[in-house]
Image 1: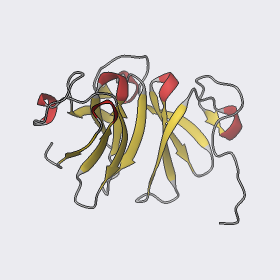
Image 2: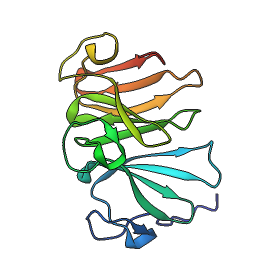
Image 3: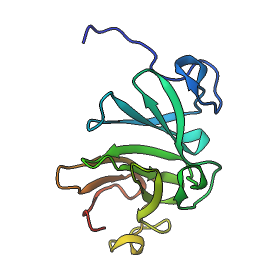
Image 4: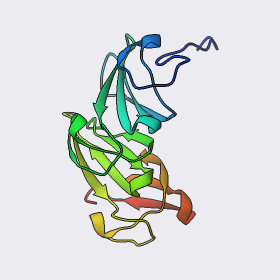
Length: 166
């Protein structure tokens, strides 16, 4: 509110390291979303170059919330894999949605850290339910108060809507 810029997480050296504020290392972070349901504040970062979703608590401690190596795998926390995650959004139930750009999917992470594919399957353009749908390089996300997810389907030049039911 005072117009001052401060580093919240990460430092001048690119890498993949959990830690406090400037000790933590990120690689090409491209998306950030806060969970308004949690006090104190919790932020999530799409650590694109490391194929991970990082969690930052208000004190500045950065941890890996989900993801490990580049790939496409659902699972719990660091057992899951992403391919260039970009955009993030958090819903009213503290679920985190991820635009998994390189896998052409929208992923959902529960507050417990379980990663699943909400929608998308392979590169292309197709409306459909869940994994019947196709995206092409999704990058941005937003969630409305009803739990609908809006997707910037970048390479298809469209904004897509995923209902709460998929």
